[in-house]
Length: 259
Image (cartoon, rainbow, N blue to C red; front, side, top):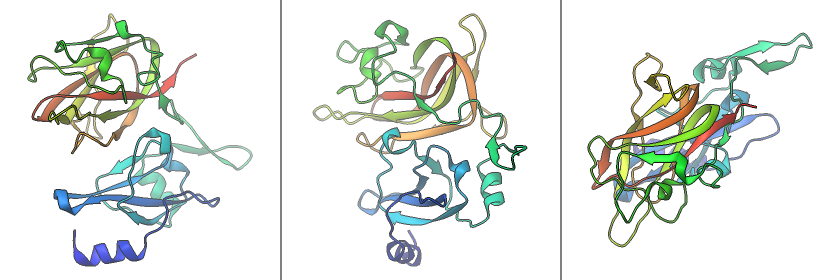
């Protein structure tokens, strides 16, 4: 990190909290000892509610959805212009007759965990390309105390049958340290099926290409990735494309159940 930027961040260190004026503070995870560059994030469920984005604190852990499903950013973004913020986060907004601003076309305005961590997704709805005897698919639940580990890294995948059509908006990934085993998934794709009988497709980026998500940089901290656009799916598959030492994975899906 540039020394001047680091000084500014330290001088501007603030608790990452939303104010009643919808001012949002951007945080940075920074670990110079590990040689990891700063990662900017907004710890809010819906950045479209922000009317201003200002600099927050350095080395603030993004943690997991319990602190608001953080949105990781590819760059430092600061703004006092609500229209610029709406455009940056690709918000879809419309003014109601009352004059208030409301979200439209938001399939899932408030993504929540879909049931991996709390066990509401049954074990037999979690399948994989393979699994070591030590590390079965059910260990792939976020914060399970262990991990799913395939027999072979190349071509490995793990998928969840949500049983019913649901809106899926993002993924939280994590690993787990067991003895000296410290592997984790560095990058992955997300495939999904709208129905169990339909063809699969990938979650795409803004250019319509299959998006390769940046996953974990260590085995300890969860990383949340929100999709550019939510998808409607019955089955969701995580496909690791790059890993450290070995594919070792826990995860949660974020989204909304459709009643």
